[in-house]
Length: 450
Ligand SMILES: *Cc1c(COP(=O)(O)O)cnc(C)c1O
Image 1: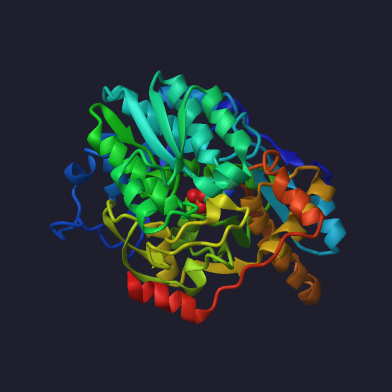
Image 2: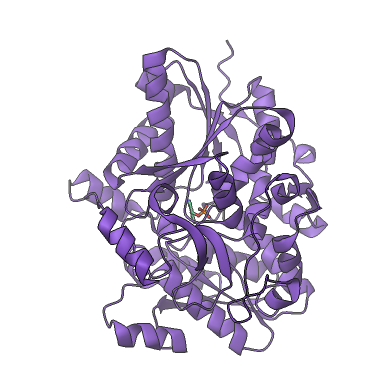
């Protein structure tokens, strides 16, 4: 057997269209609902918040293939295609007969997959005459990507970063400022939503929910300003399908097809990005790949949440989305995987899970870092705490193969590197890291209260 580890695409082989899975779903996702009128949302209802083209993509259930704008494709080529890697050393360390592959989305100057959507969102905003963009960020990966993309397209960026993450990962704020963005900790005193949250709880550490409220408020009260979101929404997952479309070609180069596709899950963009192009073959060609979304056990919306309409943010500014949720007021524990601390889940993935076509697993914090350390020591890449959840889920599956002797082909997405998350690793290595468990009562209580 060839020992080639990396499968590389030529520039000319980079896909030129994104894949919109909504077009191929037999049961379409239920529509987002306008919070005031309670009517299904129309493109016009979203267009005062997001760039128009993103709104159209959000609600498009017809077109399976969407052209990537030429200019965005050129910018993609700064760092794409990303490598697909066969993790021989990890397989060997585990002693598994499984074949483990990972798609390495950490190899771009920003360090995560988020840049794949930041570029098109800023491109469309610029095309439409916008001058300013706002956003929220948790760990700071999205904020960093957005700040860079805004600079590329000559836009001013204002970022609300979750307070606790700002403290845990101060260098991400530095990165955003280096690219010229304004960064504020959320909840802040600069918006009505922030003031209300702080008034109710002066010690609120912030969450993606609070930061989204603030960024949306700033966008809707500032002329020529649009809001951008790094996860959850359909158009974000659409942009991320570049990951899976490349991986499809690279798996073919490796002469294999995945039995399982795994990614970590915050709002679902990197998971959807790698999963949807393969799910397409389940939907259309009878393939039977298994899709596993790995979430933290302290924020278990997919495995223990409820499917219902809920707000995407803490203050209730966003449309109501039909999704798996823990309730929009849910306060996730302060785990280091900041990007996974979100109460809800993307609408498309929620529908696919509801239909039994995908499923979630929940991973305790310590298990995620066990896997991250093993991966670092075998593959030489220090993974983001978020990505550690995907690795842990892949390791679980690879260990099952030891028992059954099956040579399953496992593909996971390495959504980012952890070089700016070393405080988390220090804490793990010194034995200070803990698991956070959440009881059924707590989950039930929170859902009843929203
Ligand atoms: C933001 C982030 C995530 C979680 O977001 P998704 O939309 O669920 O993909 C996962 N990994 C990394 C490295 C991130 O930055």
